[in-house]
Length: 201
Ligand SMILES: [Zn+2]
Image 1 (cartoon, rainbow, N blue to C red):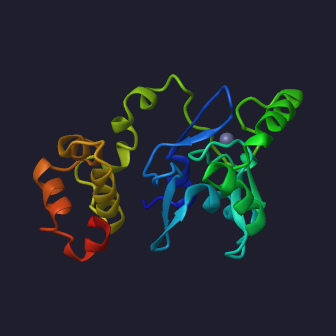
Image 2 (image 1 turned 90 degrees about the vertical axis):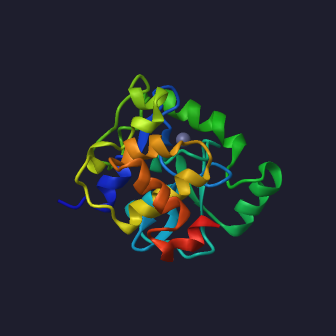
Image 3 (image 1 turned 90 degrees about the horizontal axis):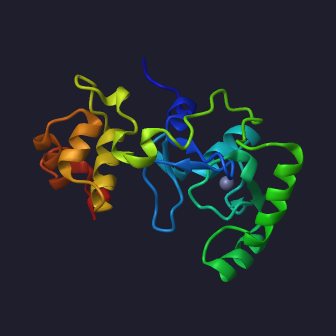
């Protein structure tokens, strides 16, 4: 059965037990923000979950990090900021986070004994830091793509973007997505899924 967006989201991060940050394990952009594919477009993963829980925000409202940790998608670490908030932060750090808030949130967290962010509305808390996905990120997200799984456009895009990062060998992507090496090279070179060329640039 096809996974819901929230299920896909929940399969995409691991919890850092020390900070309570939920660290995105899938595709990230250059500054390190998680990228989530939703209803045929890409959206920052932290913005997606924030909106999923709190309602859609206008484009000029930014999803900012209290924890100064771009790959974090813990909705408790996200706040809605104005353009001015964002620019102030960007100027300081070159990204949409607020570093001076870090100690405040840590103190607040310690005070209420919230170590792992499990107090939120997400149904399921993922594996701890000792999970193999920490050491072997290529093992994350296997099950769904086990052999015989249908290659969807979404997965093809993921493969293209992951290969572009230069972190993964084609063989590793083949293993991760349950495909043949040849299928991966066909996807990344454009022999198949040609219409996804904009992602190959
Ligand atoms: Zn965080």
